[in-house]
Length: 356
Length: 276
Image 1 (cartoon, rainbow over the protein chains, first blue to last red):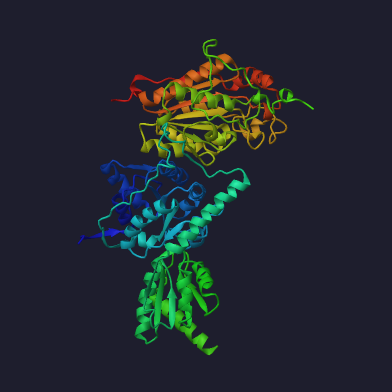
Image 2: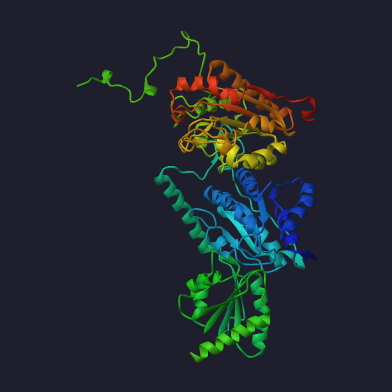
Protein backbone atom coordinates (compact mmCIF):
# COMPACT_ATOMS: atom_id res chain seq x y z
CA UNK A 1 0.00 0.00 0.00
CA UNK A 2 1.36 3.36 -1.04
CA UNK A 3 2.25 5.70 1.80
CA UNK A 4 0.23 8.81 2.56
CA UNK A 5 1.81 12.21 2.06
CA UNK A 6 0.56 15.57 3.25
CA UNK A 7 0.55 17.92 0.26
CA UNK A 8 -1.03 21.04 -1.16
CA UNK A 9 -3.41 20.38 -4.04
CA UNK A 10 -1.16 22.23 -6.45
CA UNK A 11 1.90 20.27 -5.36
CA UNK A 12 0.07 16.96 -5.54
CA UNK A 13 -0.91 17.82 -9.08
CA UNK A 14 2.68 18.69 -9.98
CA UNK A 15 4.03 15.48 -8.44
CA UNK A 16 1.38 13.50 -10.30
CA UNK A 17 2.51 15.11 -13.56
CA UNK A 18 6.00 13.78 -12.97
CA UNK A 19 4.73 10.32 -12.09
CA UNK A 20 2.41 10.32 -15.11
CA UNK A 21 5.42 10.77 -17.38
CA UNK A 22 4.77 14.36 -18.36
CA UNK A 23 7.58 15.19 -20.80
CA UNK A 24 7.14 18.95 -20.78
CA UNK A 25 5.48 21.62 -18.67
CA UNK A 26 5.20 25.24 -19.79
CA UNK A 27 3.66 27.80 -17.46
CA UNK A 28 3.49 31.33 -16.18
CA UNK A 29 3.13 32.44 -12.57
CA UNK A 30 -0.33 33.37 -11.35
CA UNK A 31 -1.96 33.11 -7.92
CA UNK A 32 -3.33 30.70 -6.73
CA UNK A 33 -1.43 28.09 -8.73
CA UNK A 34 2.18 29.26 -8.88
CA UNK A 35 3.25 26.28 -6.75
CA UNK A 36 2.84 24.04 -9.80
CA UNK A 37 5.53 25.83 -11.80
CA UNK A 38 7.71 26.20 -8.68
CA UNK A 39 7.48 22.50 -7.84
CA UNK A 40 8.18 21.40 -11.38
CA UNK A 41 11.02 23.90 -11.85
CA UNK A 42 12.66 22.19 -8.89
CA UNK A 43 11.80 18.56 -9.69
CA UNK A 44 11.49 18.12 -13.48
CA UNK A 45 15.21 18.61 -14.26
CA UNK A 46 16.00 15.64 -12.01
CA UNK A 47 14.13 13.47 -14.51
CA UNK A 48 15.59 15.21 -17.58
CA UNK A 49 12.16 16.58 -18.42
CA UNK A 50 11.48 20.00 -19.86
CA UNK A 51 10.06 22.71 -17.63
CA UNK A 52 9.91 26.30 -18.75
CA UNK A 53 8.57 29.58 -17.44
CA UNK A 54 7.17 31.21 -20.57
CA UNK A 55 6.78 34.94 -21.19
CA UNK A 56 2.98 34.68 -21.03
CA UNK A 57 0.13 32.22 -20.91
CA UNK A 58 -0.23 32.79 -24.65
CA UNK A 59 3.30 31.51 -25.15
CA UNK A 60 2.81 28.65 -22.64
CA UNK A 61 -0.11 27.11 -24.47
CA UNK A 62 1.63 27.46 -27.84
CA UNK A 63 4.75 25.78 -26.47
CA UNK A 64 2.44 22.99 -25.34
CA UNK A 65 1.03 22.94 -28.90
CA UNK A 66 4.53 22.47 -30.36
CA UNK A 67 5.58 19.78 -27.90
CA UNK A 68 2.25 17.94 -28.13
CA UNK A 69 2.39 18.15 -31.92
CA UNK A 70 5.76 16.44 -31.78
CA UNK A 71 4.13 13.62 -29.80
CA UNK A 72 5.22 14.49 -26.27
CA UNK A 73 3.08 14.35 -23.12
CA UNK A 74 2.67 18.07 -22.42
CA UNK A 75 0.95 20.19 -19.84
CA UNK A 76 0.29 23.70 -18.63
CA UNK A 77 -1.61 25.17 -15.71
CA UNK A 78 -2.87 28.58 -14.75
CA UNK A 79 -5.71 30.39 -13.04
CA UNK A 80 -8.71 32.11 -14.55
CA UNK A 81 -7.23 35.26 -16.20
CA UNK A 82 -4.36 33.17 -17.57
CA UNK A 83 -6.75 30.51 -18.86
CA UNK A 84 -8.64 33.25 -20.71
CA UNK A 85 -5.39 34.16 -22.46
CA UNK A 86 -4.91 30.53 -23.47
CA UNK A 87 -8.29 30.17 -25.18
CA UNK A 88 -6.84 30.85 -28.64
CA UNK A 89 -4.24 28.12 -28.26
CA UNK A 90 -6.76 25.70 -26.76
CA UNK A 91 -9.10 26.20 -29.72
CA UNK A 92 -6.20 25.55 -32.13
CA UNK A 93 -5.22 22.41 -30.22
CA UNK A 94 -8.79 21.10 -30.27
CA UNK A 95 -8.94 21.89 -34.00
CA UNK A 96 -5.60 20.23 -34.70
CA UNK A 97 -6.55 17.30 -32.40
CA UNK A 98 -3.58 17.60 -30.09
CA UNK A 99 -3.62 15.86 -26.71
CA UNK A 100 -2.55 17.88 -23.70
CA UNK A 101 -3.44 18.54 -20.09
CA UNK A 102 -4.51 22.00 -18.92
CA UNK A 103 -5.27 22.83 -15.30
CA UNK A 104 -7.35 25.80 -14.23
CA UNK A 105 -7.10 26.61 -10.52
CA UNK A 106 -10.21 28.75 -10.73
CA UNK A 107 -10.27 32.10 -8.93
CA UNK A 108 -13.14 34.57 -8.76
CA UNK A 109 -13.76 37.00 -11.60
CA UNK A 110 -14.58 38.64 -13.96
CA UNK A 111 -11.49 40.58 -14.96
CA UNK A 112 -8.65 40.53 -12.50
CA UNK A 113 -11.26 39.60 -9.88
CA UNK A 114 -9.63 38.21 -6.78
CA UNK A 115 -7.22 35.44 -5.92
CA UNK A 116 -9.79 33.65 -3.76
CA UNK A 117 -11.53 30.48 -5.02
CA UNK A 118 -14.40 30.58 -7.49
CA UNK A 119 -16.30 28.41 -9.95
CA UNK A 120 -17.13 31.19 -12.40
CA UNK A 121 -15.19 29.54 -15.24
CA UNK A 122 -17.70 26.70 -15.60
CA UNK A 123 -19.25 27.95 -18.84
CA UNK A 124 -15.85 28.75 -20.34
CA UNK A 125 -14.62 25.26 -19.44
CA UNK A 126 -17.51 23.07 -20.56
CA UNK A 127 -19.11 24.97 -23.43
CA UNK A 128 -16.00 25.48 -25.57
CA UNK A 129 -14.23 28.55 -24.25
CA UNK A 130 -12.42 29.61 -27.39
CA UNK A 131 -13.80 30.14 -30.89
CA UNK A 132 -15.37 27.45 -33.02
CA UNK A 133 -17.10 24.13 -32.38
CA UNK A 134 -15.14 22.04 -29.92
CA UNK A 135 -15.28 20.62 -26.45
CA UNK A 136 -12.71 19.83 -23.81
CA UNK A 137 -12.94 16.84 -21.52
CA UNK A 138 -13.39 18.56 -18.15
CA UNK A 139 -12.57 16.88 -14.84
CA UNK A 140 -13.55 18.46 -11.52
CA UNK A 141 -11.51 17.33 -8.51
CA UNK A 142 -13.00 17.76 -5.03
CA UNK A 143 -9.94 16.79 -3.00
CA UNK A 144 -6.16 16.89 -3.06
CA UNK A 145 -6.25 13.16 -3.82
CA UNK A 146 -8.30 13.84 -6.94
CA UNK A 147 -5.98 16.69 -7.94
CA UNK A 148 -3.34 13.98 -8.24
CA UNK A 149 -5.52 11.17 -9.63
CA UNK A 150 -7.05 13.28 -12.40
CA UNK A 151 -3.63 14.16 -13.80
CA UNK A 152 -3.10 10.49 -14.69
CA UNK A 153 -6.68 10.14 -15.93
CA UNK A 154 -6.46 13.44 -17.82
CA UNK A 155 -3.29 12.54 -19.71
CA UNK A 156 -4.72 9.13 -20.61
CA UNK A 157 -8.01 10.58 -21.87
CA UNK A 158 -6.15 13.24 -23.87
CA UNK A 159 -4.10 10.56 -25.62
CA UNK A 160 -7.11 8.29 -26.10
CA UNK A 161 -9.16 10.95 -27.89
CA UNK A 162 -6.42 13.27 -29.23
CA UNK A 163 -8.14 16.14 -27.45
CA UNK A 164 -7.13 18.64 -24.77
CA UNK A 165 -8.29 17.74 -21.26
CA UNK A 166 -8.99 20.39 -18.64
CA UNK A 167 -8.84 19.86 -14.90
CA UNK A 168 -11.15 22.50 -13.42
CA UNK A 169 -10.04 22.98 -9.85
CA UNK A 170 -10.26 26.06 -7.65
CA UNK A 171 -8.11 28.17 -5.38
CA UNK A 172 -9.17 26.34 -2.22
CA UNK A 173 -8.43 22.82 -3.44
CA UNK A 174 -5.20 24.06 -5.01
CA UNK A 175 -4.02 25.65 -1.78
CA UNK A 176 -5.33 23.32 0.91
CA UNK A 177 -3.28 20.47 2.34
CA UNK A 178 -4.65 16.96 2.62
CA UNK A 179 -3.30 13.46 2.66
CA UNK A 180 -2.64 11.99 -0.76
CA UNK A 181 -1.47 8.62 -2.07
CA UNK A 182 0.31 7.95 -5.34
CA UNK A 183 -0.47 4.59 -6.84
CA UNK A 184 1.74 2.72 -9.26
CA UNK A 185 0.92 3.83 -12.79
CA UNK A 186 1.59 2.28 -16.16
CA UNK A 187 1.37 4.65 -19.06
CA UNK A 188 -0.73 3.20 -21.90
CA UNK A 189 1.18 2.65 -25.09
CA UNK A 190 -0.07 5.15 -27.67
CA UNK A 191 1.21 5.14 -31.25
CA UNK A 192 1.51 8.74 -32.42
CA UNK A 193 3.67 7.99 -35.45
CA UNK A 194 0.86 8.64 -37.92
CA UNK A 195 0.61 12.31 -36.98
CA UNK A 196 3.42 13.53 -34.71
CA UNK A 197 5.99 15.81 -36.32
CA UNK A 198 9.20 14.02 -35.47
CA UNK A 199 10.90 14.41 -38.85
CA UNK A 200 9.79 12.77 -42.07
CA UNK A 201 11.59 9.55 -42.97
CA UNK A 202 11.56 8.43 -46.61
CA UNK A 203 9.21 5.62 -45.64
CA UNK A 204 6.16 7.74 -44.86
CA UNK A 205 4.26 10.80 -46.04
CA UNK A 206 4.93 14.04 -44.20
CA UNK A 207 2.99 14.69 -41.00
CA UNK A 208 1.57 18.11 -40.48
CA UNK A 209 -0.37 19.59 -37.60
CA UNK A 210 -3.02 22.10 -38.61
CA UNK A 211 -6.50 23.33 -37.80
CA UNK A 212 -6.85 25.02 -41.19
CA UNK A 213 -9.25 23.59 -43.78
CA UNK A 214 -9.88 26.40 -46.19
CA UNK A 215 -12.47 24.65 -48.37
CA UNK A 216 -15.83 24.67 -46.55
CA UNK A 217 -16.55 21.11 -47.71
CA UNK A 218 -13.38 19.82 -46.05
CA UNK A 219 -13.87 21.99 -42.97
CA UNK A 220 -17.31 20.53 -42.41
CA UNK A 221 -15.96 17.01 -42.78
CA UNK A 222 -13.41 17.86 -40.10
CA UNK A 223 -16.15 19.36 -37.88
CA UNK A 224 -18.21 16.19 -38.27
CA UNK A 225 -15.19 14.06 -37.39
CA UNK A 226 -14.71 16.10 -34.21
CA UNK A 227 -18.41 15.80 -33.38
CA UNK A 228 -18.18 12.03 -33.79
CA UNK A 229 -15.35 12.05 -31.28
CA UNK A 230 -17.29 14.19 -28.79
CA UNK A 231 -20.21 11.77 -29.14
CA UNK A 232 -17.93 8.87 -28.25
CA UNK A 233 -16.68 10.84 -25.25
CA UNK A 234 -20.25 11.52 -24.12
CA UNK A 235 -21.09 7.81 -24.42
CA UNK A 236 -18.03 6.46 -22.65
CA UNK A 237 -16.45 8.87 -20.23
CA UNK A 238 -19.17 10.22 -17.93
CA UNK A 239 -18.15 10.03 -14.25
CA UNK A 240 -20.01 11.11 -11.13
CA UNK A 241 -20.33 10.24 -7.47
CA UNK A 242 -23.47 9.84 -5.34
CA UNK A 243 -23.92 10.02 -1.61
CA UNK A 244 -27.13 8.91 0.17
CA UNK A 245 -29.16 8.94 -3.03
CA UNK A 246 -30.88 5.56 -2.55
CA UNK A 247 -33.56 6.95 -0.22
CA UNK A 248 -33.15 10.66 -1.04
CA UNK A 249 -36.20 12.93 -1.32
CA UNK A 250 -34.07 15.99 -1.90
CA UNK A 251 -30.75 16.32 -3.69
CA UNK A 252 -27.76 18.62 -3.58
CA UNK A 253 -25.98 18.90 -6.92
CA UNK A 254 -22.50 20.35 -6.68
CA UNK A 255 -18.99 19.81 -8.04
CA UNK A 256 -15.49 20.42 -6.69
CA UNK A 257 -15.21 22.52 -3.57
CA UNK A 258 -18.97 23.15 -3.46
CA UNK A 259 -19.53 19.41 -3.25
CA UNK A 260 -17.20 19.23 -0.24
CA UNK A 261 -19.23 21.92 1.53
CA UNK A 262 -22.51 20.26 0.55
CA UNK A 263 -21.29 16.98 2.02
CA UNK A 264 -21.16 18.61 5.46
CA UNK A 265 -24.51 20.33 4.85
CA UNK A 266 -25.97 16.95 3.92
CA UNK A 267 -24.83 15.45 7.23
CA UNK A 268 -26.48 18.30 9.18
CA UNK A 269 -29.74 17.98 7.23
CA UNK A 270 -29.80 14.19 7.61
CA UNK A 271 -29.50 14.55 11.41
CA UNK A 272 -32.65 16.63 11.27
CA UNK A 273 -34.44 13.70 9.65
CA UNK A 274 -34.67 15.14 6.14
CA UNK A 275 -33.70 12.57 3.50
CA UNK A 276 -31.22 14.40 1.32
CA UNK A 277 -28.50 13.09 -0.98
CA UNK A 278 -25.61 14.61 -2.87
CA UNK A 279 -24.87 14.22 -6.54
CA UNK A 280 -21.36 15.21 -7.60
CA UNK A 281 -20.50 15.37 -11.31
CA UNK A 282 -16.83 14.43 -11.76
CA UNK A 283 -16.76 14.97 -15.51
CA UNK A 284 -18.29 18.37 -16.27
CA UNK A 285 -17.90 17.51 -19.94
CA UNK A 286 -19.26 15.01 -20.70
CA UNK A 287 -22.02 15.93 -18.25
CA UNK A 288 -24.04 13.23 -16.39
CA UNK A 289 -27.42 14.41 -17.73
CA UNK A 290 -28.84 10.90 -17.90
CA UNK A 291 -28.29 10.02 -14.25
CA UNK A 292 -29.77 13.37 -13.20
CA UNK A 293 -32.82 12.61 -15.29
CA UNK A 294 -33.20 9.28 -13.46
CA UNK A 295 -32.83 10.95 -10.07
CA UNK A 296 -35.45 13.51 -11.05
CA UNK A 297 -38.01 10.69 -11.04
CA UNK A 298 -37.17 10.00 -7.41
CA UNK A 299 -36.59 13.32 -5.61
CA UNK A 300 -38.94 16.25 -4.94
CA UNK A 301 -36.42 19.03 -5.50
CA UNK A 302 -32.77 19.61 -6.35
CA UNK A 303 -30.57 22.38 -5.00
CA UNK A 304 -27.49 23.24 -7.02
CA UNK A 305 -24.73 24.94 -5.05
CA UNK A 306 -21.91 26.75 -6.85
CA UNK A 307 -19.30 29.45 -6.25
CA UNK A 308 -20.74 31.58 -9.04
CA UNK A 309 -23.96 33.26 -10.15
CA UNK A 310 -25.50 30.02 -11.42
CA UNK A 311 -23.77 28.25 -14.28
CA UNK A 312 -23.83 24.47 -13.84
CA UNK A 313 -27.46 24.80 -12.70
CA UNK A 314 -28.35 25.27 -16.39
CA UNK A 315 -26.94 21.80 -17.15
CA UNK A 316 -28.79 20.32 -14.16
CA UNK A 317 -32.01 21.81 -15.55
CA UNK A 318 -31.21 20.39 -18.99
CA UNK A 319 -30.89 16.92 -17.44
CA UNK A 320 -33.95 17.24 -15.22
CA UNK A 321 -35.98 18.75 -18.05
CA UNK A 322 -38.62 20.32 -15.83
CA UNK A 323 -39.58 17.16 -13.95
CA UNK A 324 -38.81 18.64 -10.51
CA UNK A 325 -37.84 22.14 -9.34
CA UNK A 326 -34.11 22.82 -9.65
CA UNK A 327 -33.06 25.60 -7.29
CA UNK A 328 -29.78 27.41 -7.02
CA UNK A 329 -27.67 28.81 -4.21
CA UNK A 330 -24.34 30.48 -4.86
CA UNK A 331 -21.73 32.79 -3.44
CA UNK A 332 -19.34 34.83 -5.55
CA UNK A 333 -16.30 37.05 -5.31
CA UNK A 334 -14.18 34.44 -3.58
CA UNK A 335 -16.71 34.00 -0.75
CA UNK A 336 -17.57 30.45 0.29
CA UNK A 337 -20.89 29.47 1.89
CA UNK A 338 -20.87 27.72 5.25
CA UNK A 339 -22.70 24.39 5.48
CA UNK A 340 -25.18 26.05 7.88
CA UNK A 341 -25.91 28.75 5.32
CA UNK A 342 -26.72 26.09 2.71
CA UNK A 343 -28.86 24.16 5.21
CA UNK A 344 -30.83 27.30 6.00
CA UNK A 345 -31.39 27.99 2.31
CA UNK A 346 -32.49 24.40 1.70
CA UNK A 347 -34.98 24.46 4.59
CA UNK A 348 -36.48 27.71 3.32
CA UNK A 349 -36.90 26.18 -0.13
CA UNK A 350 -38.49 23.00 1.25
CA UNK A 351 -41.02 25.12 3.16
CA UNK A 352 -41.71 27.24 0.07
CA UNK A 353 -42.29 24.24 -2.19
CA UNK A 354 -44.40 22.52 0.49
CA UNK A 355 -46.61 25.62 0.79
CA UNK A 356 -47.01 25.91 -2.97
CA UNK B 1 -12.69 21.18 -85.35
CA UNK B 2 -9.25 21.38 -83.77
CA UNK B 3 -7.30 18.20 -83.97
CA UNK B 4 -5.69 16.79 -80.88
CA UNK B 5 -2.32 18.32 -81.61
CA UNK B 6 -3.87 21.78 -81.75
CA UNK B 7 -5.43 21.67 -78.24
CA UNK B 8 -3.73 24.29 -76.12
CA UNK B 9 -2.59 23.42 -72.63
CA UNK B 10 -4.76 24.84 -69.83
CA UNK B 11 -1.97 26.78 -68.26
CA UNK B 12 1.56 27.64 -69.21
CA UNK B 13 2.76 25.19 -66.59
CA UNK B 14 1.24 22.30 -68.53
CA UNK B 15 3.40 22.97 -71.58
CA UNK B 16 5.00 19.68 -72.41
CA UNK B 17 8.75 19.84 -72.67
CA UNK B 18 10.48 17.58 -75.16
CA UNK B 19 11.66 14.27 -73.77
CA UNK B 20 15.15 14.64 -72.35
CA UNK B 21 17.65 11.94 -73.10
CA UNK B 22 20.36 11.72 -70.51
CA UNK B 23 23.02 10.98 -73.05
CA UNK B 24 22.22 14.17 -74.94
CA UNK B 25 21.50 16.63 -72.09
CA UNK B 26 23.09 17.31 -68.79
CA UNK B 27 20.61 18.14 -65.99
CA UNK B 28 21.85 21.43 -64.57
CA UNK B 29 18.82 22.35 -62.53
CA UNK B 30 15.95 20.54 -60.91
CA UNK B 31 13.25 21.33 -58.39
CA UNK B 32 14.37 19.95 -55.04
CA UNK B 33 12.94 16.52 -54.23
CA UNK B 34 12.02 17.97 -50.83
CA UNK B 35 9.30 20.07 -52.48
CA UNK B 36 5.83 18.65 -53.00
CA UNK B 37 5.11 18.64 -56.73
CA UNK B 38 1.97 20.77 -56.80
CA UNK B 39 0.97 24.17 -58.13
CA UNK B 40 1.37 26.95 -55.60
CA UNK B 41 -1.31 29.46 -54.72
CA UNK B 42 1.10 32.40 -54.70
CA UNK B 43 0.70 35.39 -57.03
CA UNK B 44 3.05 35.78 -60.00
CA UNK B 45 6.28 37.41 -58.88
CA UNK B 46 5.74 36.65 -55.20
CA UNK B 47 8.85 35.94 -53.17
CA UNK B 48 7.31 33.22 -51.02
CA UNK B 49 7.48 30.45 -53.60
CA UNK B 50 11.12 31.25 -54.29
CA UNK B 51 12.11 31.28 -50.62
CA UNK B 52 10.18 28.04 -49.97
CA UNK B 53 12.27 26.48 -52.69
CA UNK B 54 15.54 27.88 -51.31
CA UNK B 55 14.82 26.42 -47.87
CA UNK B 56 13.95 23.07 -49.36
CA UNK B 57 17.10 23.14 -51.50
CA UNK B 58 19.14 23.63 -48.34
CA UNK B 59 17.28 20.74 -46.67
CA UNK B 60 18.01 18.58 -49.72
CA UNK B 61 21.65 19.68 -50.03
CA UNK B 62 22.27 18.97 -46.34
CA UNK B 63 20.26 15.73 -46.53
CA UNK B 64 18.28 16.61 -43.38
CA UNK B 65 14.70 16.00 -44.53
CA UNK B 66 14.28 13.38 -41.79
CA UNK B 67 15.53 15.74 -39.13
CA UNK B 68 13.78 18.97 -40.10
CA UNK B 69 10.55 20.33 -38.66
CA UNK B 70 9.08 23.58 -39.95
CA UNK B 71 6.48 25.90 -38.49
CA UNK B 72 4.09 27.68 -40.85
CA UNK B 73 2.64 31.06 -39.86
CA UNK B 74 -0.65 32.76 -40.48
CA UNK B 75 -0.45 34.91 -43.59
CA UNK B 76 0.10 34.15 -47.27
CA UNK B 77 2.49 31.34 -46.37
CA UNK B 78 -0.05 29.65 -44.11
CA UNK B 79 -0.08 26.77 -46.61
CA UNK B 80 3.71 26.30 -46.53
CA UNK B 81 3.15 22.71 -45.39
CA UNK B 82 1.37 22.00 -48.67
CA UNK B 83 4.62 22.70 -50.51
CA UNK B 84 7.46 21.66 -48.23
CA UNK B 85 7.80 17.88 -48.03
CA UNK B 86 8.81 17.78 -44.39
CA UNK B 87 6.99 17.42 -41.09
CA UNK B 88 5.41 20.76 -40.20
CA UNK B 89 3.14 22.45 -37.70
CA UNK B 90 0.81 25.32 -38.50
CA UNK B 91 0.92 27.87 -35.68
CA UNK B 92 -1.64 30.41 -34.56
CA UNK B 93 -1.00 33.96 -35.78
CA UNK B 94 2.29 35.18 -34.32
CA UNK B 95 2.92 32.13 -32.15
CA UNK B 96 5.40 30.30 -34.38
CA UNK B 97 8.38 30.94 -32.09
CA UNK B 98 6.50 29.59 -29.06
CA UNK B 99 5.51 26.49 -31.04
CA UNK B 100 9.09 26.10 -32.26
CA UNK B 101 10.32 26.39 -28.66
CA UNK B 102 8.05 23.51 -27.67
CA UNK B 103 9.38 21.36 -30.52
CA UNK B 104 13.08 22.15 -30.27
CA UNK B 105 13.29 21.89 -26.48
CA UNK B 106 11.88 18.38 -26.70
CA UNK B 107 13.93 17.39 -29.73
CA UNK B 108 17.23 19.30 -29.50
CA UNK B 109 18.86 17.18 -32.22
CA UNK B 110 16.37 18.19 -34.91
CA UNK B 111 16.60 21.14 -37.25
CA UNK B 112 13.72 23.47 -36.53
CA UNK B 113 12.74 26.62 -38.38
CA UNK B 114 9.85 29.05 -38.35
CA UNK B 115 8.67 30.79 -41.50
CA UNK B 116 6.94 34.06 -40.67
CA UNK B 117 5.81 37.24 -42.37
CA UNK B 118 6.08 40.78 -41.08
CA UNK B 119 2.56 40.97 -39.64
CA UNK B 120 2.91 37.58 -37.98
CA UNK B 121 6.38 38.16 -36.51
CA UNK B 122 6.67 41.90 -36.00
CA UNK B 123 3.10 42.79 -34.95
CA UNK B 124 1.04 40.11 -33.24
CA UNK B 125 3.99 37.81 -32.56
CA UNK B 126 6.69 40.25 -31.46
CA UNK B 127 6.54 39.10 -27.82
CA UNK B 128 6.92 35.40 -28.66
CA UNK B 129 9.70 36.22 -31.13
CA UNK B 130 11.65 38.53 -28.84
CA UNK B 131 11.54 36.17 -25.88
CA UNK B 132 12.48 33.15 -27.99
CA UNK B 133 15.54 35.00 -29.28
CA UNK B 134 16.34 36.28 -25.81
CA UNK B 135 16.36 32.71 -24.51
CA UNK B 136 18.60 31.86 -27.42
CA UNK B 137 16.21 29.22 -28.67
CA UNK B 138 18.26 27.06 -30.96
CA UNK B 139 16.23 27.35 -34.13
CA UNK B 140 16.11 29.40 -37.29
CA UNK B 141 13.61 32.18 -37.88
CA UNK B 142 13.01 32.87 -41.56
CA UNK B 143 11.45 36.31 -41.57
CA UNK B 144 9.75 37.35 -44.80
CA UNK B 145 9.50 41.12 -44.94
CA UNK B 146 7.43 42.57 -47.76
CA UNK B 147 6.23 45.57 -45.78
CA UNK B 148 2.57 44.65 -46.12
CA UNK B 149 -0.13 42.23 -44.95
CA UNK B 150 -0.44 40.02 -48.00
CA UNK B 151 -3.16 37.50 -47.23
CA UNK B 152 -5.68 40.06 -46.01
CA UNK B 153 -4.86 41.98 -49.18
CA UNK B 154 -2.55 44.86 -48.52
CA UNK B 155 -2.95 46.47 -45.12
CA UNK B 156 -0.19 48.36 -43.32
CA UNK B 157 2.40 46.22 -41.53
CA UNK B 158 4.85 47.18 -38.77
CA UNK B 159 7.48 47.22 -41.54
CA UNK B 160 5.54 49.39 -44.02
CA UNK B 161 7.84 52.14 -45.29
CA UNK B 162 7.24 55.79 -44.31
CA UNK B 163 4.80 57.30 -46.77
CA UNK B 164 3.98 53.91 -48.32
CA UNK B 165 0.37 53.57 -49.48
CA UNK B 166 -1.57 50.59 -48.21
CA UNK B 167 -5.30 49.92 -47.84
CA UNK B 168 -5.15 51.04 -44.20
CA UNK B 169 -2.72 53.89 -44.78
CA UNK B 170 -4.39 55.28 -47.92
CA UNK B 171 -2.52 58.58 -47.65
CA UNK B 172 0.77 56.89 -46.98
CA UNK B 173 2.18 55.68 -43.65
CA UNK B 174 2.32 58.67 -41.31
CA UNK B 175 5.16 57.95 -38.90
CA UNK B 176 3.93 60.65 -36.51
CA UNK B 177 0.73 58.61 -36.13
CA UNK B 178 1.90 54.99 -36.52
CA UNK B 179 5.61 55.19 -35.72
CA UNK B 180 8.47 54.20 -37.96
CA UNK B 181 8.91 50.76 -39.52
CA UNK B 182 10.39 48.21 -37.11
CA UNK B 183 13.84 47.05 -38.13
CA UNK B 184 13.43 43.52 -36.88
CA UNK B 185 16.92 42.22 -37.67
CA UNK B 186 18.66 45.15 -35.97
CA UNK B 187 16.29 45.00 -33.00
CA UNK B 188 16.75 41.29 -32.36
CA UNK B 189 20.50 41.36 -33.04
CA UNK B 190 20.88 43.33 -29.80
CA UNK B 191 19.81 40.31 -27.77
CA UNK B 192 22.64 38.05 -26.61
CA UNK B 193 20.59 34.99 -27.59
CA UNK B 194 20.86 35.88 -31.29
CA UNK B 195 23.98 34.30 -32.83
CA UNK B 196 23.44 34.95 -36.51
CA UNK B 197 21.38 37.78 -37.94
CA UNK B 198 21.37 38.72 -41.58
CA UNK B 199 19.12 40.56 -44.03
CA UNK B 200 18.95 39.51 -47.65
CA UNK B 201 16.72 40.19 -50.65
CA UNK B 202 15.50 37.86 -53.38
CA UNK B 203 14.91 40.41 -56.15
CA UNK B 204 18.02 39.50 -58.17
CA UNK B 205 19.98 36.40 -59.11
CA UNK B 206 22.81 37.48 -56.82
CA UNK B 207 20.38 38.16 -54.00
CA UNK B 208 18.86 34.72 -54.42
CA UNK B 209 22.29 33.10 -54.23
CA UNK B 210 23.24 35.11 -51.16
CA UNK B 211 19.92 34.29 -49.51
CA UNK B 212 20.41 30.59 -50.08
CA UNK B 213 23.90 30.85 -48.64
CA UNK B 214 22.51 32.66 -45.58
CA UNK B 215 19.87 29.96 -45.11
CA UNK B 216 22.51 27.25 -45.49
CA UNK B 217 24.68 28.98 -42.88
CA UNK B 218 21.76 29.33 -40.51
CA UNK B 219 20.83 25.64 -40.77
CA UNK B 220 24.44 24.63 -40.12
CA UNK B 221 24.82 27.07 -37.24
CA UNK B 222 21.89 25.37 -35.49
CA UNK B 223 24.14 22.39 -34.85
CA UNK B 224 27.34 24.36 -34.24
CA UNK B 225 26.23 27.27 -32.09
CA UNK B 226 24.04 27.98 -29.10
CA UNK B 227 21.40 30.53 -29.93
CA UNK B 228 18.92 31.74 -32.49
CA UNK B 229 19.51 32.46 -36.17
CA UNK B 230 17.42 35.07 -37.94
CA UNK B 231 17.39 35.40 -41.70
CA UNK B 232 15.30 38.40 -42.72
CA UNK B 233 14.40 38.32 -46.38
CA UNK B 234 13.10 41.34 -48.26
CA UNK B 235 10.57 39.95 -50.67
CA UNK B 236 8.33 41.22 -53.43
CA UNK B 237 4.60 41.58 -53.08
CA UNK B 238 3.66 42.84 -56.57
CA UNK B 239 -0.09 42.31 -56.06
CA UNK B 240 -0.36 44.45 -52.96
CA UNK B 241 2.30 46.95 -54.02
CA UNK B 242 0.22 47.39 -57.22
CA UNK B 243 3.29 46.80 -59.36
CA UNK B 244 4.49 44.39 -61.97
CA UNK B 245 7.02 41.84 -60.70
CA UNK B 246 9.81 43.78 -62.44
CA UNK B 247 8.70 47.07 -60.89
CA UNK B 248 8.51 45.37 -57.50
CA UNK B 249 12.06 44.11 -57.84
CA UNK B 250 13.25 47.63 -58.66
CA UNK B 251 11.24 49.01 -55.71
CA UNK B 252 13.30 46.82 -53.37
CA UNK B 253 16.56 48.22 -54.74
CA UNK B 254 15.35 51.80 -54.87
CA UNK B 255 13.21 52.09 -51.72
CA UNK B 256 13.13 49.06 -49.40
CA UNK B 257 16.88 48.84 -48.84
CA UNK B 258 17.00 52.48 -47.67
CA UNK B 259 15.04 51.43 -44.58
CA UNK B 260 16.19 47.83 -44.53
CA UNK B 261 19.87 47.74 -45.55
CA UNK B 262 21.09 44.35 -46.72
CA UNK B 263 23.94 42.32 -45.29
CA UNK B 264 25.09 40.45 -42.20
CA UNK B 265 24.24 42.19 -38.95
CA UNK B 266 25.61 39.67 -36.48
CA UNK B 267 27.90 36.70 -36.99
CA UNK B 268 28.50 33.76 -34.63
CA UNK B 269 31.42 34.15 -32.24
CA UNK B 270 33.72 31.48 -30.87
CA UNK B 271 32.13 31.68 -27.43
CA UNK B 272 28.75 30.82 -28.99
CA UNK B 273 30.10 27.39 -29.99
CA UNK B 274 28.35 24.38 -28.54
CA UNK B 275 30.59 22.34 -26.32
CA UNK B 276 30.61 18.71 -27.32
